[in-house]
Length: 510
Image (cartoon, rainbow, N blue to C red):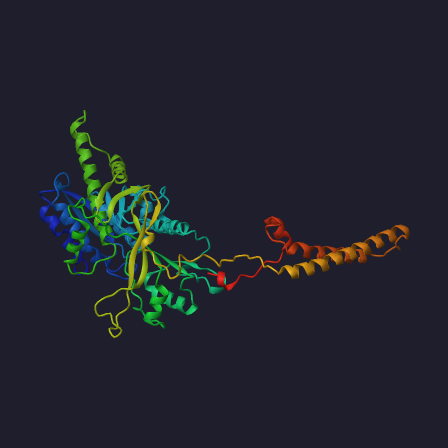
């Protein structure tokens, strides 16, 4: 009984008002014990879900005429157990049209494929992985959190914005670029728990400073706390390595100051949530909006079915389960309202939202964060831009950017070719010597050719003398052209004669 404590608290108010309001049964599938990350997902999401149900109860008609009843299903992050729990709930009844949840990718992938056959529609609050992007197979799966590929698209737009073409990729299971590979722009895809280890390694390898730019495509919104895990680097070393790095993350709360569909502003919602005093999951705002999506689409379908029965020419006409499923699917596709995470709408099954571009600029000043406090250093994040998935454009506030160098880092070593100039006197002396050599060579070459006309060459003799004189003639002629500049010869012609590439000078490497 203690294990299902959140379930009793969740459905308690529903049982009291069941006689007044029409019930809307909804399945709520989450791991009761712990999620994929080991945290108690049900307990951390309960405050946001409970607050959404409370806000729905005080709404006017038509929302006020219905009551959402959540049936908790423990997936245990096991596809087989989750599927059995789902079949048992569908068999026991009542008839369900919609399911919330989706915290375990393995469970979501299996159940989402079976949703059309089960006559269900799922609204998730977890970012769908790229494996669930096929809308032909997963057309009944929607999520209030944008998919992972949205963060990847924002990363590509950011790279195009700064014209970075040579990029290194660092992931959890793939080693990153080395200094010998001359990679200056590094895109990281790893969990927040690996931040300390990664930047400590970057500090030891010297992959930081004005010549390097780190871009962390994190996705989930969360603060960075360097040094909270054991590391061989000091706090100042970690801050030095991470300073100036970018982080792309999904916007968790809307910045609007106007009330949303629930009558609360995002700031009021967060204040009310913090009054609960319990630790909340970073996905709490997406779970809150997911409950509102479920309630709105179910009410829309129920009201449409009532109108059809009331005004139909045939008496006691009812909407079939297949028609009800199609109506529900169209209702979700056309959903549009202002939630605590911003405008909630879907395009091709994906949530339209904003990806924030955060740049970390120095250490955040906090009370008690002195050298003797022992607290882990926090990087000060500044919102310097955003990527809107609606028009797929990245907007960067240049006045807020701060780089360690004179500007953004270059994606590779810059090599500038410079023509080396020689003195006029030296050029004249060498040209005169080359001209004399050419004259002597032509004279000897003419004598040899005339001699061959008069005295035929012996069989088997090779023309080595002629080839040697011809090479001497060409090398002497190149001396005359190598001293000329672009004012005398066009660029392509000059590059053809000057075939030796100059070495990059240290002053022009960045």
